[in-house]
Image (cartoon, rainbow, N blue to C red; front, side):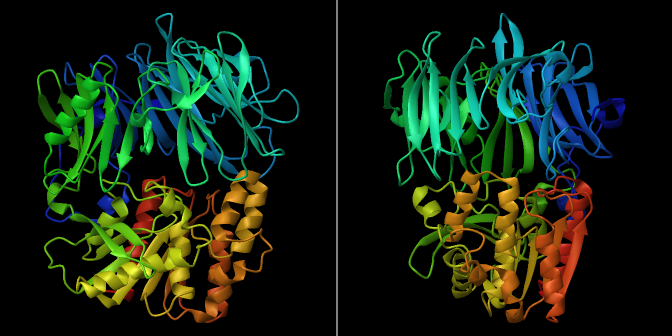
Length: 640
């Protein structure tokens, strides 16, 4: 994966922003030219990913203003870059393959490496040779760093084989030598928490056979079972350590959501978590620790709540510095909060990374996320709400084309994937790319979406292809009533679940959409559940059965909501797009739908993305998807 290169190739292009009168479509379809900007703990160095004339991880000195080194990553699918300490940079990638020595379908495997800034060496984090046991070189979770005797050590969740059957395991990795050591073995579905000293203090297990989740805690050297909870669909989760390190923070299902508890590391007693830990969408951990020091709260924008007064004051000051921005996101920070990297999105800023010094109260632009997309190309985004047909309030993002009155516009509806997911604040390359061609874009947060509370999520159970679908068309009707869009010029575009929704819009509804684009969408829910039985665990399958409102892949109720069963109802053109390396939704879902539509004499196009996975991880195929989509939209639903 890693090849060191000459730094001269990218040094001049890193901090400069290229302006353009009108950003080309290719600019939106490429991977960002700048991303993953991470500041080292000592505040002297920044690592970032650069995609321009190749793809690199660069190391940049803030003191000298010079590039120190760069690592070429070529077509490797980069998933994360993070500092372990000032000299060790952790790099996580993934690949689509069958595991070494394993059988079964291809799947996505994550791997981690460490780049030593001093020696310029790259070593794997899971060295099978040094461990001396049967194990995989893949990881099942992000590496966690602890400072042990003043040295950074990585703790990694992985897999080992005490017999022919693989088990979860916790490994400890020396970041200088790469020596890998098995710390604790677990069951098939185990997770661990390691304290600040590098000692495992908690382990959770889920047993598929008994459908029980258990939590064991280390009470000063003695492991006890603190929780044993039955769960067929919702199960507890270990979230981290309390801010003072005295307890394990656990999210417990209650039947109408989740409630947080503290499990004491002294004796295993269970108490309610402080109110400050409630109502967050994601936790913020202290550097080199599992201690939860705050949380992310997502509404129409990113907000933070920190438990420490200095961190909370730092965030409030940062947010106040960008009063006109549509979103400000903290990307990385030094442990003392002197240096912070933020990603800022807005009409004045475009989409860029800034470096903020909270000691001198100064900020500077580090670089734009996309060189060819300037602030003048940013399409304005509004947070809107509307009533669904049954009275439920639905929220969403409405992106409007620049320099056009918001009246009688052509509309593209883009439902997100998941479906238990949501659209995030900030720059969205797909909606911005489509809006740049003159379209209004609606991204509804329909029932079944996560991130807005249990009520909205659970309202989607059993509503797959039903009210989850009409939530989208109700948004079209609302924008029509307001005069913003022309109801005769509406198309739907989506990926994964959004791809299903696009196909459902063409087959299960009539008269709403003028065309539909499905990227990696589900078409045959019988076959999809059969595929899930081969590739997923029973807990996940039960979760899908509940969302679909069925009792398994043979349930005849699936016929009513499977687009492939309703191709005769299609009256609009359909574009199908699918990566042939997709391990989440098999390509057969698009191939079979294409064959069925052709057999029925319906207008259909099929674009296969060679070597692409489920997440459009490569620039070439991402742009292929976007350009094919826009060409199809312009042919069947012109923006003018």
